[in-house]
Image 1 (tube, one colour):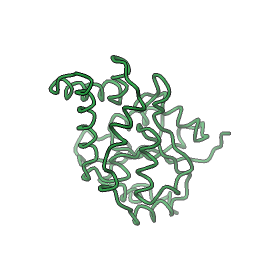
Image 2 (cartoon, helix red, strand yellow):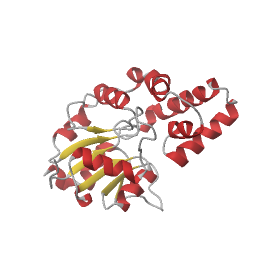
Image 3 (cartoon, one colour):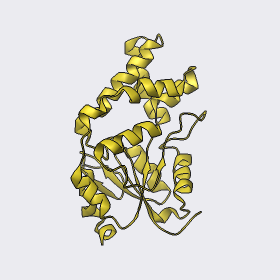
Length: 218
């Protein structure tokens, strides 16, 4: 069922929690370790991880295209083994911000749903969203950001047809650029506020969202 109700899509990793926690660095280490376990030399694994992330949006997508891998086992050994309980803590200020939003809220992540749910639970905001669009590792050649197909999937799952009623906050410039090309209103979470800027708005932390889109709290 589709409606004309606007939807705010939230990225998860390094967006709902701060990048300074270092989760992305641990994730990179886990991915490289997985490559090495496959028999790829470490120096090559480091290079491939970065290249696949750029070329396909996710290292896993590159692995699936060039190697035979079990995506769910990969998720278990990479995202599933991250010590998130030691890193991500409840964020009362974020919860208060989300509770005050006068708009439908939806998670839009390149992670598998298990990781997304885990992050939301640890942040104490797992009851604040109407749904989640995630990279479905169970599906061969699954869609993920910044592929335009993944944005269309997110819109369909959130029940919205008009892209001008879609908002996205994300820490990835390429993800922001793709959403903006479809007509979404975009907010880039970034430490780099120098040119070239990405998105309609730029903020340093998710907590600054009301500063750039105050009408969503009125």
